[in-house]
Length: 91
Ligand SMILES: [Zn+2]
Image (cartoon, rainbow, N blue to C red; front, side, top):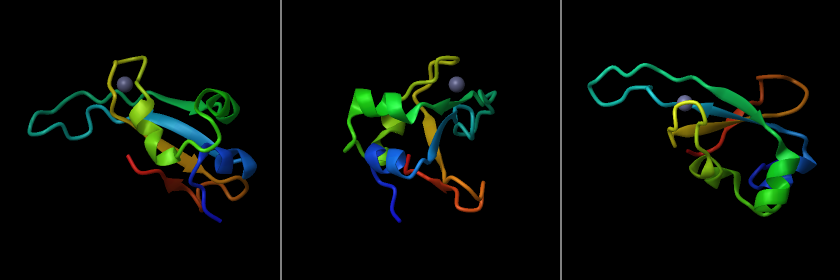
């Protein structure tokens, strides 16, 4: 089973969680991490992006509302066995 698009995510009831990764190793400086996270509403994303929108491109369209960073990672959680089958979309 491959989850590649928003349509796939909806069909397989996976959960998408956006996570702000701002502050994770910013060059040599130490930057305070933001860590803001939010579970995305897959159905809303379907209406706004369309069912063929690739999940790999999702993180590039997101922006953290807390710190304004565009460095947002999207975690994919499969239904059922929590965590075990968790995969992460390309950043
Ligand atoms: Zn943030």
